[in-house]
Image (cartoon, rainbow, N blue to C red; front, side, top):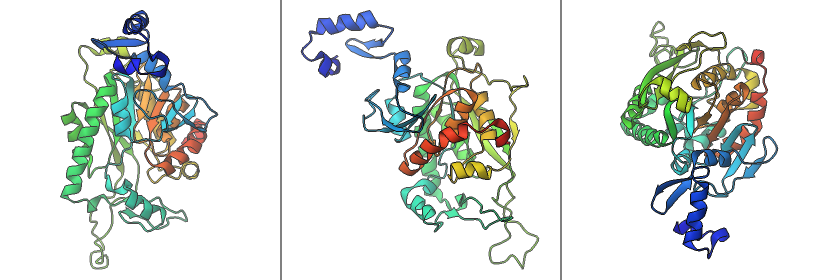
Length: 364
């Protein structure tokens, strides 16, 4: 109540007048959490989240809402809103039970997206990033060297995802699904951390794709051991699937929140846990030259499947170049993203409209 009375609009107003206003507008605008303690209702907060104005791709300034500073840059394109801020701070500031699904490709090695390693990558020096040689006349995308991560790195990785999982559970509605891209070397750490945080593990979505990971002969001994591979050549990518616990039955969550299950495919078939996928097309990489860019053909399938009734808000807390938000826009969903790197944020502002407008056949 004290914070409300200190606002310029209500400065000097009697406490009884403020209480009367809150009571008259509850629960349409406010939720009473205790004596003298009110917050914006979820519906009002969602209207504020999507109230940013401007032309598609413009960077605009969001007014102070839910504790977020007014200077945080925001990009909006139709139903997609991207914030240039740290996802931990953003998640902490959001009201509970406002997000219906999460689809994200996080920095699961952590080290590779530090300022130091990003500077090396952008300067073409590699660092923790391995720059594969050209193949068939095409320059290959850089890959992070996850095998160089030591015990302390792995411990920090677990702590990172445990803290992230706890924050995520605050904003998810019951039955909301969380889909997290990973890799075979680190998926067990990420999965256990999120389960320990309280999410319910629901399996994995396997992206069948040939990559350049593994398959190498022994370093500096490839002629001596020509028939030996140090690691298997990676032909798949695990996307870890979790669900916010439901109090009751799936049908109850579907009726109240529109969540709890997965949306069947456009052909009416069950959503499957194996999806064939090619590498990201060169045309998409030209639009969004992010080192971890995933193809729209794959993202549109998984994003569509996360909202069983086709309604709700999809969040990508590690938005990168905005490809998940573009996929959500392409299938007709509202989406929110956060991206802390200013360069990737600017890239996303240009890429989201272009990726979202790609026709379906152009993404296959």
